[in-house]
Amino acid sequence: MKTDLQQLIGNTLRWGVTIACLIAAIGGALYLWRHGAEPMPDYTHFAYNDPTCHPAEYTTLEGIWQGVLSGTARSWIQLGVIALILTPIMRVVLSLVGFLHEHDRLYATLTAIVLAVIISNSWNIE
Amino acid sequence: MTTVLVFTLILLVGAYAAGLLGSLTGLGGGVVVIPLLTLCFGVDFHYAVGAALVASIATSSGSGSAYVKEGITNIRLGMFLEIATTIGAVAGAMVAVYLNNNMIAVIYGLVLILTGVMQFVKKQDHIGERGSEMARRLRLYGSWPQKDGTWQSYELRNVAGGFGIMGIAGMLSGILGIGSGVLKVIAMDNMMKVPFKVSTTTSNFMMGVTACASAVVYIQRGNITPGIACPVMIGVLLGALTGARLLKRLDVRVLRRVFAVAVLAVAANMIYMGVTGKF
Image (cartoon, rainbow over all chains, first blue to last red):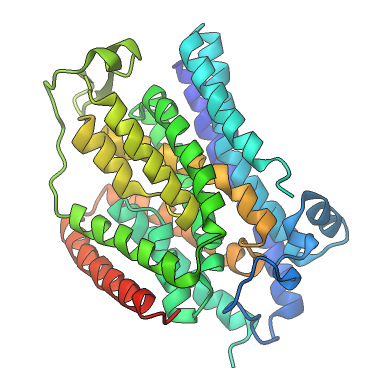
């Protein structure tokens, strides 16, 4: 793979994690400012069928986006998590571009399959 | 009574230590995050797994930015094996719904035992190894830079076996949120005969991509909760960055041994509590 593309991948990873951390830090600071003195939430029990375990403000893309716009701390943190998840996915996309550029059909196909598996699993389960 | 502030600060420090240890020992941040949350704070495993997933992606991307430049990572090999790990991760995320805390604890404990034991097995460079026809056709052979500036080429074999183990590694990642680094090393180092340096960085590259395959599902299910994800993400990342810097100067052989023993002790505890239904 070409050096400039490797450089680009390296930079993408560095910027990806930096941006993700900054967004999460903004959310975290807001969260502590507003809720820091409250007793910690009950994390001892989780149930898939309990709606209090997955409020829309951090489990759906729509809910997260609305929360971000209205300044909800938890939604900001979750936006940071999404930015973190997108970072390795960007790396796969850039590798695909690299293989296509080298006319490496076999590996362009294999990379496309990996990307398809990730995207198909991420698209609306509910 | 623990307030949100205290919990967040303790978790931030704990996650920093997890990232530091994970990067010095090459095990990734997720391995330490799970016992920290479940054993120290009594957090439900389903939240701990979500946090481990976030830690795995943070470690992979954080240390990955340093590795790509040096040209050690075998992207072809990683991408080929990613097909097995991502499909495995999707299957694992499906299975996870049917597992209760005690079952997850036992599975995690067994992976930890394997991890601890493998720390004592010597890693090799496999120079001069004859590769297989299949690996040659898939163009998986490569080379990596030496200290003196020359490139050492290598061949590899047993592609099918490695691919199969990677499927299991992916499935465990989908269930536990960890990078399953130990299975990746067994597949690449022991079966495919990939040189140690190449297998470490390639495994790190794969860890982030595999975790992404199940991460969105975990967000939708509510396993990744902001109050835990935020300190874990920031702490692990900073710890991994410190670790990557220290790694160049420190001799970590003793640390790895001590850590392996600690890992075995935690594993025994996890399995005992899981089998007796304490979670």
